[in-house]
Length: 510
Ligand code: BES
Ligand code: ZN
Ligand code: ZN
View 1 (cartoon, helix red, strand yellow):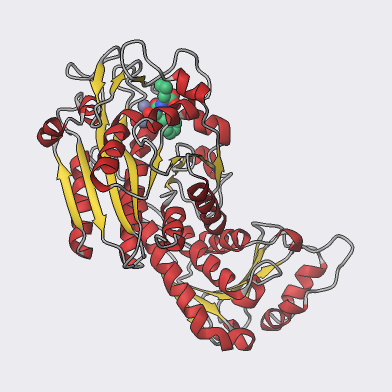
View 2: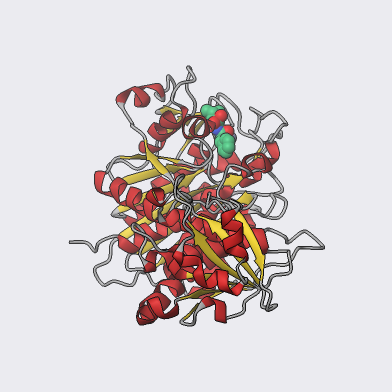
């Protein structure tokens, strides 16, 4: 979808859809909002009449369509909820509702009236960015395998009118930057949505290689032979069950735009299918485990965003890719395997495979690149979903500044993140009788945090943040109803906008 800034009054543009936001009307105030005056005139009084009969209440998700008597398309009012609870995320959701509600219904173009999406806590720039975000992400659909698809919205315009025409240059810059990032999210979703027969570890390595070629990045792909030479026992063990799709470790390097830029490593769990292995999962929803590569695919997206937006820090992307399936060659419960950094891991449950592949990726990047910070993204535990739900990612970090920076980025992108504690209790629980650590615990408590305690032993003292994205990484038909309209069914590419915004704001090394 193309998004443009247009200085004209939106009603003049004659787009298929003209969209205006409307705040929820206070209970005892029936005055017709002055801001809808022009829209009302364009419908010859129909909006005022709808207001009078309380057809329009301004509640969130409320979409009301008016057909212009002059034949110049439709005017759509989208509810913004109460004025006091207005935020950029309300605008993001509203734009997505408009696009989602109108696509496939004979509309090709949408014109947003910027002034109607601006409020006390949301200035024009934040509103324009959120409209762009919501429109592009709300328009997304994974239709690669469908022979017929409903139409998409092809163009959105954000109209300044007289009110904001002075700010045109600044608003254009914001919208161009936001659209570039959202295009990366769309690209990322397209890869994350690929099923496991297609998105093998080798295919992810090929995507990384193509990305590197497009942007002149450095890429290294370690295959199973090389992994054995290097001593990456974790990735090899998890990948050992799949003869069809052997494991890969992929390193991508974006050199950074700043002279004194920091080096930040981003490490992703790339299990292309997680059947559980010998500790096999039950059949219901096992198919969702094609999304168990979401962390690694987000890393691809973050690298693409860093290169596209020419971010200041140097970014090292690490994709730990394997397919976790049972067979005669699979790793087993009880096995002890050695990770890249020399530590041994006792396997109690082959379904706790994410931490096992990440151990090599984390150990490798810390030893080879001495990064200033490491961020990992992983659909790591069901316990994360139980604790925080399917909208909010869990964060565990050993560094205050990094944690605060990520929380600030989360607030600005609307990707919810909640910090969780890591204590000696969790470290104690992953101690093993026969190895340095074990990949599962005897008692089923604090699953998200014992997983983090396991990972911690492979990053040492490097400032590190672990993002468990098991819940928010994908949306199912069942959870869809509860999610914002900018999340389609399937892969969300959670973390791409968040980590990119973090990298953008990361201060140079002082
Ligand atoms: N990939 C799963 C975690 C997951 C669950 C992701 C639900 C997305 C949605 C992970 O590999 C796993 O199976 N973890 C186990 C660990 C346990 C065996 C210690 C879990 O959470 O049950
Ligand atoms: Zn698993
Ligand atoms: Zn998994």
